Image (cartoon, rainbow, N blue to C red; front, side):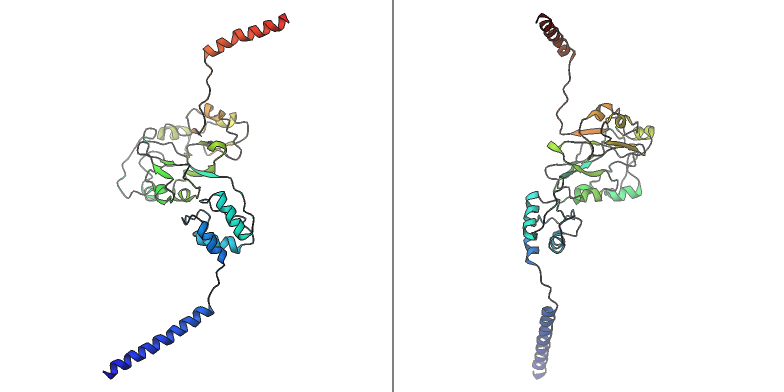
Length: 298
């Protein structure tokens, strides 16, 4: 009985000594946390999406407190009101950024892009891109496995079962950019929302020459350059057989859309254009003649 009690006593003493040592070490090497970090973490969305470029909301909060300025620091998942609250907590001015939204630059639906082979493997875009290049003849467009859907933490992007393409819910999208990084084909881009959430962009990333691109997809950009010529704001460039619209220069005039023979340019959230019918033009002529007659009479 005595040996058992002795062992228990020894273990208790050792545990007490180790506890004291751990306490002293913890006190000596304790890191004081700025209370403002916790305040910022509480008002952040807590998605840890990495859209700010840092590994999580805690790292973003620490950066807001420790850095000398808020330049380059922005949480895309937070509203401007939240960023203003962070500015009030830190006492630093917050840079106002233009709201952006993710855009899928591919219109290679099942109807527009015929299937040329059958892939029967792991349903992940990154794997398909490395192994086969996809089931269609386009080696640039969407692979349709939904990697972008999987990584989105805001439920802002879903696969359309009819087209086989991802679609972005602009009301939920925070422009965190995670889907952009997840796409191995680089078809998702963050673009300015603009006034009334209107956007114009080339819905194609195919860099093949015209005949090859058109064979792979009925609505592929063929690099004809008609859109470049009609643009009055130098917003469209043509490089590697592919047109691109600079959203910083684009004035949303929509002239390029009428010129595109492939319907590769998309306009989002625009009202339909007014079409002047021949009947309407005819009814205007008597009015013009009447006005001219009145001028002569006077």
